[in-house]
Length: 183
Image (cartoon, rainbow, N blue to C red; front, top):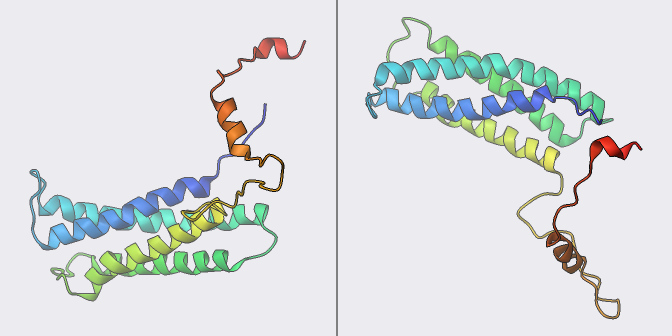
C-alpha cells in the first residue's frame, strides 16, 4: 500500500491562518467593551492574548517544518518561497512585539494605537500574504482563471475529451475485491 507522509507544515499553518484574524476580531470587541451572546470583554481579552501567543508558538515550528519540507521537494529557493520566509519572520516579530505590549501593567489599548493596527492589519495582511503564496506553491496552476484545457478542433469530427469523460462519469463505480487481486 502506498504510504503518504504527514506534512506537519500544512497542519501547523492552518492554525496560524485561523488565529490571526480571531485575535483581530477579539481585540476590536475587547476595545469596544462589547458583550456578544453573553461573552464579555474579559473573554475577548483572554482570546486575544491566547491567540497571539498561539500564533507565536505555532509559527516557529511552522517555519522550521516549511524549510525542512521544502528541502525534500525543491532544488532551489524560488521567489515565492523567499517571500513566504520573510513574511513568516515578520509575523513572528510582530506577534512577539504585540505580546510584549500586553505584559501586565501595559495599560488600556486604544483602537487607533500602533498595537491595534499591528494586530488588526499587520497580522492579518501578513497571514493573507502567506496564505496566497502558500496556495500558489501548493496548487500550482489551479486558479479562478480559465483552465489550460482546449478541445482538439483539428480532428474530424472535432474531439472534446470532456465529452468522453462525461460518458464515463455516468457509469457505476467498478468494485475491486482486494483479497482476490493477488491471485
